[in-house]
Image (cartoon, rainbow, N blue to C red; front, top):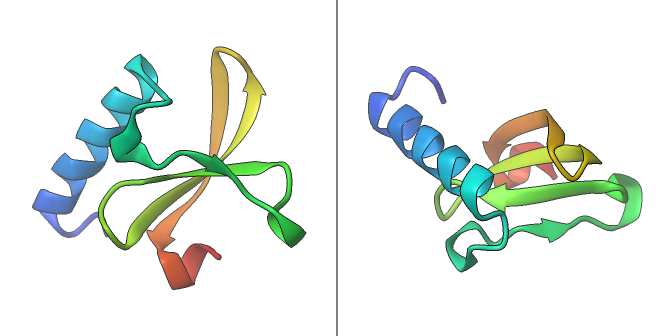
Length: 72
C-alpha cells in the first residue's frame, strides 16, 4: 500500500477525517463481529480498510491496513 503515493495521500486524508469526525459517513466506521469482535474498521477507499482497537475515547491502536480480503 505505501508504495502508491496516491493511496498514501488518501490514507492520510481519511485518517485526518477520522480524527476530526469518526462518525463521518465516508468512513463507514463500524464494529467488527466474530473472531474480530472488539475491533473496528473504517474505509480508506472502496477496498482498502483500516482495522483498529479503541483504547479510550481519545486513543486507538491501528491493527491492520489492507484490502478487504487481507484484513478480514
